[in-house]
Length: 103
Image 1 (cartoon, rainbow, N blue to C red):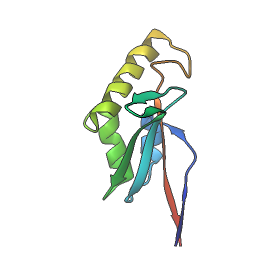
Image 2 (image 1 turned 135 degrees about the vertical axis):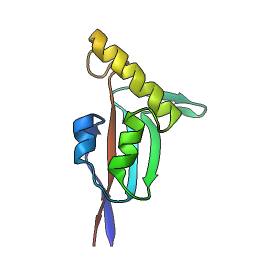
Image 3 (image 1 turned 135 degrees about the horizontal axis):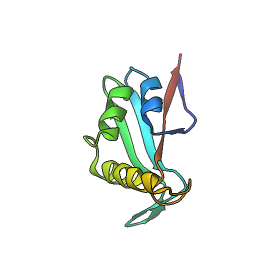
């Protein structure tokens, strides 16, 4: 069995509705921004593993019930989006990618 990573998709309700209802791993990253970590900068803010459903885990993150850092960035993006920030600027949404398994 081999696995490959999917393309990046915006972390939006419509993307979550199309996410797999199967277990897997996923990565949430910032769209055009970087988070400062103790050892440097990275666009990745979260790696996750869904034991039952990737869609359910993404729905939890999007609803503010997931990882605290993800919730902070998504809340900031909602506020900035309503204020009209440009894509790639602080306040824009995160993106998500996941593993795609082949047998």
